[in-house]
Structure formats: structure tokens, C-alpha cells
Image (cartoon, rainbow, N blue to C red):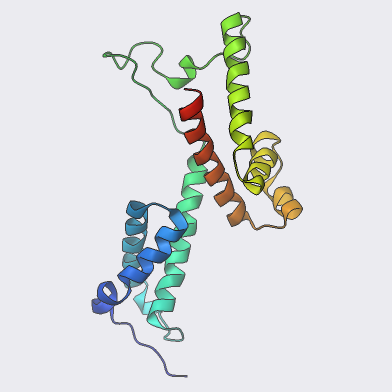
Length: 184
């Protein structure tokens, strides 16, 4: 088998469109896909000395892009629950009550309005879950609501962890859209 040689000067012209289409089909966001392709080219340049020539240039770049896509989803999932959500309800952004947690009803409060608000939100979430595709809804319920481990969900549904996280991401996105339309 002939050894392949890298020609980084031609990468953008020869492979950018293919890599972009590959990336956008996996992350569903053109801007993120562009960033991932750019990161792929940089990583390719940085690791060119490790290229053995066993695979075609495009195949090698696609393998780098695959790792970039995986890293992208890992980064997203590692930040979940760690972000502070700030909502500006008035001119004074430091005013008390700007933090989302302060606006959400306290589940332990004895105040009747909070109990009613939590029941309404719970009902709205359940309604939105029923609108998800069946497998997405099941994955979301098992992992997020019932708290099953990733390994247990994957074994039970015969899927791999990457598929699990993609389905959860899509379910969360769809639920947020549904809640924005029907509850907020």
C-alpha cells in the first residue's frame, strides 16, 4: 500500500466542505461546526509529525474531527449543572432576585403559590415529555428523572454512551423549546 503524504496547504480547498458537512450533521450548529473544523486543521498541523501515511489525508482529518466532536459533547456535559444562570428582570442587574434560583419556587416552602407553581411546572414538563420521540423520552426519564447510571441505561436500551448523551441533549433542547412555548 502506498504511503500518503500530507499537503496542509490544500486542506481548506480540498476538505473544508466535507469536514464541515460531517461536523454540522453531528452538532446541528453551523458556527460550532466551523469552529470544530478549524480546530481539526490546527490539530492536524500540530500532529503532522505523527502522521504515518497509512490512511488517506481526508480519513486522517476525519478521525481528528471525530475526536473534536466527542470532546465538544464532553465539554458541554461537564458544564451542565455548573453554570450560573442570570436573568435580568430590571435595570439594576445586581438587584436581589436576578438569579434564576431566586425566581424559581422553593420546593420546601409552605407558601401555597410556590406549591401551585411547582405543580404547574411538573405538569408542563410531563406534557412536554410526551411530545418527545419515544426513545428520547425513555432515555430522558431513565437517566435524568430516575437517575439511572449511564452504564445501566446503555445496557438496558442497547445503546452506547455517545448515543445516550446525544439523545439527552436533544431531549433537553426539545423540552426547553416546549416549555418556552407552553409554560413560560
